[in-house]
Length: 310
Ligand code: CP
Ligand code: NVA
Image 1 (tube, helix red, strand yellow):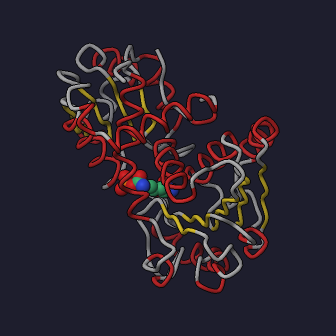
Image 2 (tube, helix red, strand yellow):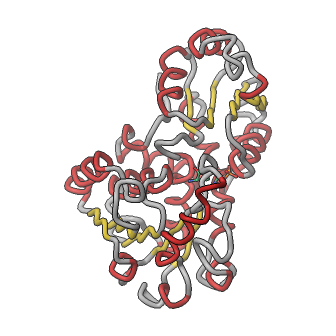
């Protein structure tokens, strides 16, 4: 049995297989109308969501199955009345696949350990692999390939989306550069950088971390940013974070250092005037809503693959 815990643990071949399936799912959704008939997806949420919840739930319905939305705060797990292990051993008796959006990655690992059905990471403090599969699909649609392209990520480097982009990008032969403020609190985790250097050696890609936003973005094919206020960030840190990240804001002046045909991406939600300006996210280079749409197709491919239903 396979899970989707992190792209770090998936081979480039596995990622390619899922991307190819996602392309077919998007082009021919009717082929998969009954692929998940009578199957149930349990969706455990400890944090808010628009895209993840709607895309997983719609995807299951479109494939003939059903999705159960389960709010962690109303569960025995959330109130500490039942352990993760007992909850998962029980839930696995009822459902065919589980996705979870959690604060702590260790909790996801524990879920996977005790689940007898596949578990999908729908965002933890460590990573957000479903997002990056959708992103790679979107890049391939717009650019015809992913290998050899330069993807520049700007802003909060110590971030789940950043880490997954680095894993997914370097596994697939991309040149991933991260422009973020210096210091452990804001830069990508050292172990992620070290792993990605190894993945890049295999794939012909590269990984580069700098605190210079212009250097990060120079000649990029893809410019990517994520929220400066991730769901777990307390309100009282917002002002200090805005000051810290403002030099990394993706605005027209910064975009001018990327290739003229560069695309702009953001996993969303986004705040205009923070991680990017309105002219960039609402401008002609932005593909953020195509990117968001692919959550549906890519996750259908993940579910089909893990459930052996492709
Ligand atoms: N990008 C993303 O995961 O969005 P949600 O938080 O709305 O699910
Ligand atoms: N880094 C963000 C991603 C939201 C989809 C967060 O963790 O909230």
